[in-house]
Figure 1 (cartoon, rainbow, N blue to C red):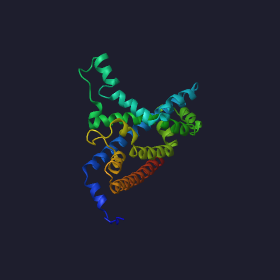
Figure 2 (figure 1 turned 90 degrees about the vertical axis):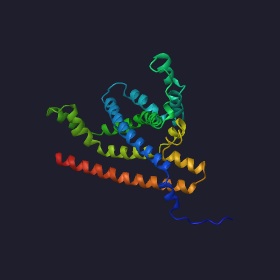
Figure 3 (figure 1 turned 60 degrees about the vertical axis):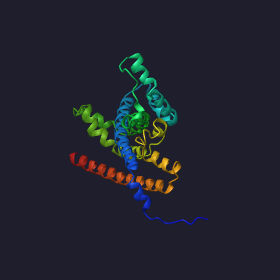
Figure 4 (figure 1 turned 45 degrees about the horizontal axis):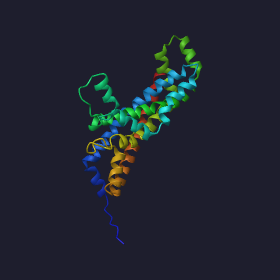
Length: 254
């Protein structure tokens, strides 16, 4: 039986010196920074619209939630078909609208490939955000809005003075959960780009998967997972502190 050799921090040194790891790390950060705010903003916007609808509210909820329950694999394959070089989007641009003379290789470059994955992530996340924010909005006392209307507040003032402070706990919850989800993006990248070209669209999880199951470097992959967990912990601390500072500012204003 082969004797195991303790190598200390060698895996961590190898990870931190690997340019492909830093590429995947940067891609994950960019994915999170783009998709999280847009999911929250669009989800809250849709929640406010649905909350103001008196008739067919359940229907609108279901329609907006359908992307959430759609399989990641199926949605990713559809997006790959649409944005493929010989896909549906290029067909309409070149053959129907005659906007482009040749097909655009959407999935063959780093940032355009990541953009496609980010569009999918935002589309699938809006419905989940809508449901969470809608539940929070319905807990804000209506009396506050009525009192604000009597005082002459407009819709924007009500939003910033009543709505946002009333759902600040939900905003923190959604922020943290979406950040974790952003760092765990895997299926869409794996199915749409596969990390190509040359691992330029890999994220932390897809790179970790490749190193573990394609090269057999499980120690390297374990080190990547600990680095990711540490990064998420630091970001969570920052998020909680940012929300506390925001609460203090609101209390001082109030």
